[in-house]
Image 1 (cartoon, rainbow, N blue to C red):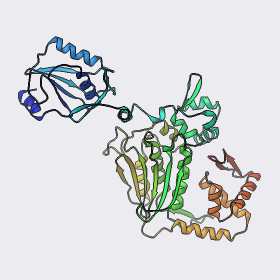
Image 2: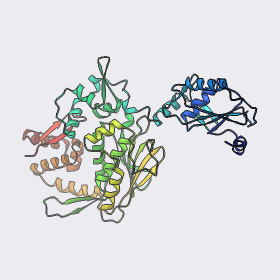
Image 3: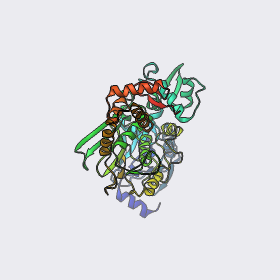
Length: 460
């Protein structure tokens, strides 16, 4: 510090990093906590609000008083005390163990003022600092008898390649989604998202909403689905929705079945969808992860923007997980890779197939935008489906209908009987009859309940 620097600071006045105080008072603890909770700053003692030096002596008693105030914050605030020209300067570095609290509550620097944080502000602050994680909180309304679905755990273990050698309680604890509290198993929110019958009533914000629009704006919606099962099922069902809306072309490979080539690689879209589910901010209610399909693009958005600690410059180069448990569970079923390579994988898949690079938008939402093909090389999926339905309706062979059912189930193990009926061009009763025959022949099994379960094909 020199006289020119001091004169400049006094002339500029109070700011986000500078506070003036004439003397030590009770309010000093608020300033210390506020600077520690923000980006740090300096408090100039012996200076009035207008930047006039009133003077104060840097005595042992004063320094001891300041240190006591800093020590009594929770946790203690680190301070460095110096003096220059009858001004005592308290330097407060940004805290490493936020949030800091004084006897009057939690304060944070807002512009040139220190403001007390209300409940909602404190929740936002804790979340932003990574101190409050939705997935780690215990769900207050989850009841194991009413809400837990053991078949979803069994399906998860099969996908993860884990043999079920322990009881459900122990497995859930080892997966990090439940704890034994007061001799009672309590489910975390992460467990609810994977192993509840439905998220509709418990974590509605985890819904994936898929919509297809006519044209290039959000004016006329032609198809919409809200998926409210577990996260893995929601991803699968959303991919089925997207697949039905994409344009496709066919290549003859010499095999009995021609090869389908989609205008955007399905693996790239799946990677983006899994990224949205894995990184969304689940504390934010009232907003869903969304898939919006327009004539010229597909937009996949999730609430929360970029996780704390990840800048736009570092995006795609550095891995920062907002939801550690969710990402870990998705990794176990091979939907998430370990080193944050998803964005680069998407870019590589698009480049390898001649598709345009994706665009990204960062604000309170994170959005990835895929450009759709406009060259006319791909047929409209709806037209192709109509051709298939017309052909299938003229074929009376129940054997071919059964094979078509199995093929559609291979593509989407969560497909419903009404969807099968629509795809094949048969009545629901006819589809149910064929499914019954396939199950009797030992070629098909139903895993789980009618709502939330899936099909398992037994190849002979």
